[in-house]
Length: 522
Image (cartoon, rainbow, N blue to C red):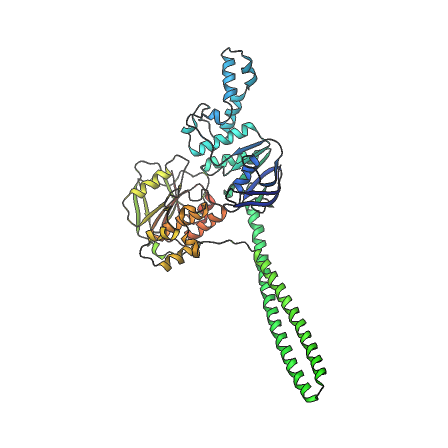
């Protein structure tokens, strides 16, 4: 079990992450979700003991295993080192060679190699030897070795930070199987929709609210809550209008009544002292009525504010990019594949996990019109290499490429300046209006690119690319390191893109959401 009681944590510059977080996570698999910067990775580091709370407490029952996003790697570090079994293996080999030193018997674990091998094989790492250096592994293989190491240690609570980021489809599904079969407690930070649909519950940060079930159940709950919140806002808006109207009407009635009273008093010839007393009584009554209506109006406004706060800010990117439009018959790309094994077939319905090897094996990649092509294949099959080669090929239409590194921004200048560099013909108003659609409104457009958060950086990079009005857009694993909201925003932006698209991704739900028309399997 993992428990947070009144947990406070701030970064060194004073930026708050948690302010009084209360959260209890029980056995089973729990997914941590929230926008970038909400503290998901920070909570795992606090639970692992790598960070210390400013105030309050975080407690974990039993032993803890932690697989961070970036594993500590050394040039000469081996798989055995990463799995923490090198000392036990050395002792085993020494004893087998006849060395009976007491130290070896203290360190030996007789079946360590068999158990380690079993964990590696379970995760599809049959060809990865224990003495292989970690530097020779791919990013996905390194993650899987780290996961195998944690499974071998068998902690009571296992903390996983974006474990599927660098995994291909086959590796992802092996991880899904391993996670769901784990008998202990797992807390996983992820934006992988498939993985998040397999968890027992979701905990949303920074408030710590817990939802039973996976991502689909969570979204169903939010939809119902949003509809209810919107009804409450409409009702509160109606109440405010009604109270305003009643306040005006009450004021008009009191004014008219006072005027009629003055006329009546003038004709009746009452003594001044009596007239004064009646006037004061009328003023007091009018004042009480005014205060009563003003209080009711203030209460209605408070209820409106409360209702509005219950509505989530699900800001989406909605852009119209007519300059990117490509006629259906226009040749966009003719690229020789040079012997690369590619299966090319049309898509109808959701993308499948395992591609069926049917269709044609073309000698060149031909793209016509606004096709949307998914580039699929295991890690190491050449997806990134193919995209980079296309960028060096003579352009038939304006082409832009968004690599995984997002290194298309000039870090030293503002977001607006980055866009201005690729759209010199655009007016200042056009640039700022366009950036507002990418959620950089007002002064936010003047923020220096180097100071942006991960999600902001991605939106700025995407804005720079799309402002260049490309008719062929190449994306390499665009959803890596994006939170769920940013993935939705990306899909929204691509809805307004009218050109051709080639995207390398293992994120099948995302590919389905952007209307893929063809798949290329490497």
